[in-house]
Length: 418
Length: 95
Ligand code: SF4
Ligand code: SF4
Image (cartoon, rainbow over all chains, first blue to last red; front, side, top):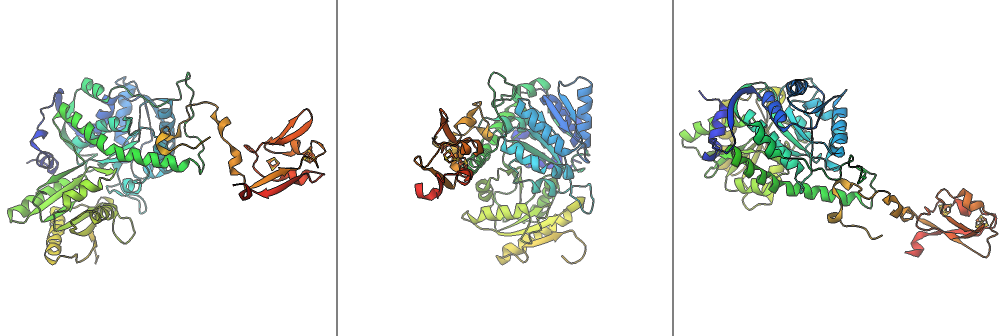
């Protein structure tokens, strides 16, 4: 029986997804962290500075063994904290190196200050980010509170449903980050344990093709170019700070087209199609669910079940959260009568979680306005079953029939009255 | 120096021109302006040694004026002057 992830991989995208790219490719079985470590090995960055944190640990562990065994020429910097990891990445990137790191949860939280520095200095650092809940209470399992909290730090954010997407996104991230229109750091998300620690099959392209695809890094005015001395991260007052922020916003805006262009080029190599989002049975849908990452696989099986009953159910799975493609996302949903957005994080604002509030804002500017509800689910790794998602679809159907939401913000799968 | 638009800046504010702090006029920050009365001045050289921004111009042991590109308007010169030859005025009078 195919896994949910395999099912979405083949069903959620077009026929082009059947591997027929020009690259030599092999199918391997590995964990999500293993897939990411392989992508990092093939990219062969100049510097990796990282600190281990569950569930990211295995990425750094496996990559360190590549470094120790001479499989990469990377300078591994072992540091005493994530704040130091990101700081070392910033220094190395400004010096002119291609730099990567990886983190999760509290590790990302400890990087907070320097995340903004990396983005503000326009340093194209690539960071796989394994989603895990934040304390307290202490929990090591999957939810999206960590990366959602960092969504305004100026990093591009790509979300992956499975190992294949995590691998592909990490390779594409290098090109997106380093593009001269962009020069911004990129985070690539994968779900903690569900994707990071489950062994799945995925297709790897050959090392040579990956190297040619990422090509040589051309840094902007690197510190180590001693013939052309430069200063990175200078003091900036009221007379220029605003202009620098404005140009940073423009780079984020421009990155949308770069993400699409890089995806097209990658498709030629691999046959795997990437866009800003994926959809399943959405074109003629009356009700739709929007959800990120691994839960999409489960949702596909629910759509199949409901379609068999004659219910016009559809699914939308955003890949890109920063930049937020408001126009494209609104366009994809504008014909739907009722939409439920499933968020694997809460923003404690009492008016809904991040994905819901941003999509609702996007719909406000568009012509059609589906009735929109929010389901906060899966916090701290709480399982989400097909029956949970089916409940969401059935509530959404009621909302579509009534033309209004019964309850805008809901907690799905929690014990006790919501 | 006319100020650049956001489209004209280097990514991340990287400074590609070493030593360009020379062209930065810290005098822009000033809210009070020292006005020197040449006739009242005895050239005692107290204000040049007290000015924290080296903004009192001196030539041949004589005070010649104030460098408004760098004077921050602290008022120390006016305070220290035994001849009351420097008076502080609101910058708004000159804009
Ligand atoms: S006001 Fe202050 S900075 Fe300006 S000339 Fe006088 S002492 Fe120097
Ligand atoms: S302190 Fe007064 S008198 Fe002495 S040099 Fe300065 S302005 Fe002239």
